[in-house]
Length: 462
Image 1 (cartoon, helix red, strand yellow):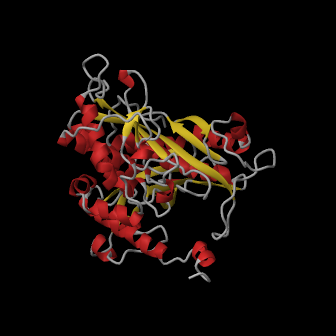
Image 2: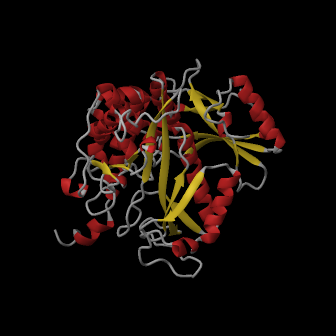
Image 3: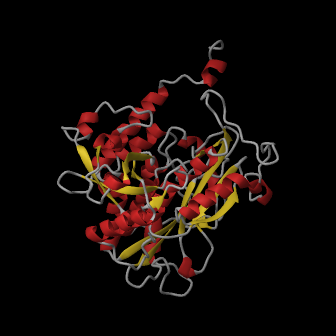
């Protein structure tokens, strides 16, 4: 099924059902994976025989999947966060997201589903609905956000013992990388068999993967996606993570999107390039009317990012490990400074023509839920537009010299989010409350673990 073009009108429910059934029949699909992105950005759902699958099949899942920690636990306030009956959600497939599962033995399709309450309302806890609500705010103002994510990840040796540090895998030469190989073509070619398989999978799934580069870490890679609407890009990042992990596993190694997987290697980010179009004309609203100048909307949007990103950090850095990436001396940002083509800043404006003006937000880690990271950065910009905020002067020196302006831990970042009413209002108060409870439970679980560092340096020395 061809992807919907930007200027096409969305299909109604009957048209979606018809096109989806036709797509499945043409490919002689035997099974359908009904996917729902959970709060971490991983796939949950059900596998249904194609003969029994339909648009109105009535697939259901408990809403508790959105109030579950990464360890499979529930917050202490679980029954305050879900409906008193702990009821099911009703799933409805988005026909535009249907794709083959290229690694399946039998013809298998995967399709992302949206979640609804029993009375047909979009479920407030579903990350995809959180993003859709933010996009509706822009639509009401005649604006259309455009984004292009850049996703970094590491290839590592299989690690079945969590106490053993991760190691770079051996490439075609039989030797692992020991030196940093930024932008090295030969270093990328070391993993040709894996990457060729990844590209084969991506092509069959119609993922808009653009360029591939070797990043600065050992066996660290980055893929860039073609710019488009935020929902489709979040969907593609969600699907790509599954795809990359599977391609790596087929060759006996792991692909990890952990923000900081190795102590002496840089972290992995998900940079989000973002611009704003006039929904009717397609003109970039960040470009000013006067020659060589940016618009007031651009400045307001940038001002909103500077003000609200620190409170939105739980969506960009959602795990305890995330904050290891945001450290002085690394390439990751530690504050909300901005500048033209300044990679030390959290907000970089690439040097380009005025018509191609965009902001690159560098805060999100590769471990972030793409739907929530997209929603959060757009929410921050929207607040800047509504409040008519002004940005600081662009920085031409190193932003690292300006010190920290971001929370230093998951615990601290959740406190900042809890105190930000405007952001909670846009992201959804019920959702944010549930999200904070889940992440607080994860932090409590993590804090109970005694690390090897404590055993090594404190056991006999204090």
